Image 1 (cartoon, rainbow, N blue to C red):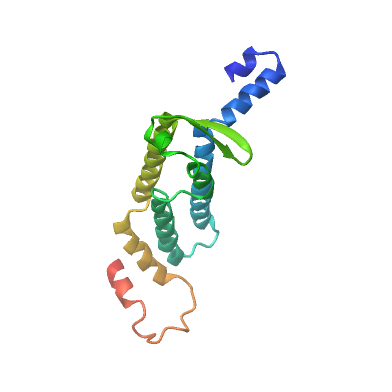
Image 2: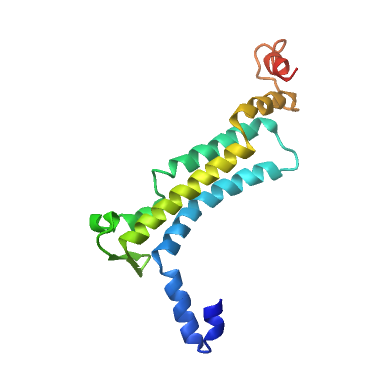
Length: 172
């Protein structure tokens, strides 16, 4: 913001803003966030429901964890679009290059590629750590057991007399 306030020429402000938006780190970070945010948003919405069904909590948490874990090794569509254009020399950090992303030219250095890779790994690991901290896997059994107390129909259960006994025993 200090840059924009110090320049009176609106064209200079726009050019500076455009330059910031065309940096590899910004474009790659947005490419990562476009896949992470919907996962976390869905998980958040599961918890915001007025009538929370406890039986969907563990699958929603497990799904979020597995999707975010897979992002450590698999880039999404937009990151692939950028990284597929990078020569090996740039990835190795010995040369810079120019790639095109959605019709815009982006200069990329090997240092930027390595820096983003470290940021991506750190971000995903911290997100997974936070999910494990908030929803410990060893506590998920209790939540699953509480789900048996939900007011769901159990017409499809073959042995209604023993349905839920194991979960109730864990709770007791």
